[in-house]
Length: 304
Image (tube, rainbow, N blue to C red; front, side, top):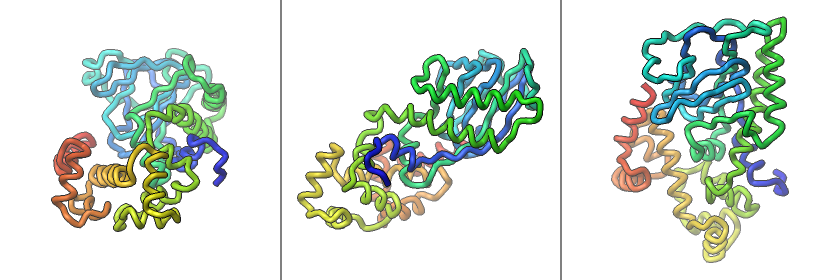
């Protein structure tokens, strides 16, 4: 790995988003559509026309040609022709039609799912908000509108668009959108400091790969070839947190993912290194503000 790069670029390498097209085409008239329930992060690009994004607890967001949204967790949402959330129940789920070159009065969408590399990539994604909206009018990276225009051009071909090319362009677009978002380094805290440290990065990779190991201050110091006292001081100076705090955060985030994926509380505790269910429950409850059993039930309700 080239350590002369910025922490954002290192994190992008760990995330490495891979797109998979879900549906592409046009909607016309009154319509609504969603990819909720597939347990995947998704992206939705408006290549023509306009629509509204409806997310629970958030005012409807208008999206127009050149805008897009990344849904980073499988939360309930709708894309629709209607601004009024109250009208959604009366609108049937509509069948998408194939792209028609130079069509008017229609909303063209390129939609798909994406996956990130397990481990650090998933950890970083979990620290981002549920959704990221990007608009051509406010994008700071000039590459994003260029890639978007290539996607639009492909959807407007006289022949059917190439799914392979749209997928590759979507991969590239995701990388740039996430790069722009990740430039707000202060919102992700110590993980950036760990990734940017040539000394501590190997430890972070080990902690992510082996959260169930019997980690102590000594074993962490041994991993990076330092004495306990030197390691503790360097870690605190670098991240502003103790090694124990970072290990706890990592284990709790991984446990939450296991619970969201319908693992039992006992399984989640064991997978992140807790042999005592009572100790795991106390730690999880302090970290998330609710017991792991309640967290698991709420996660199931959201994905229902």
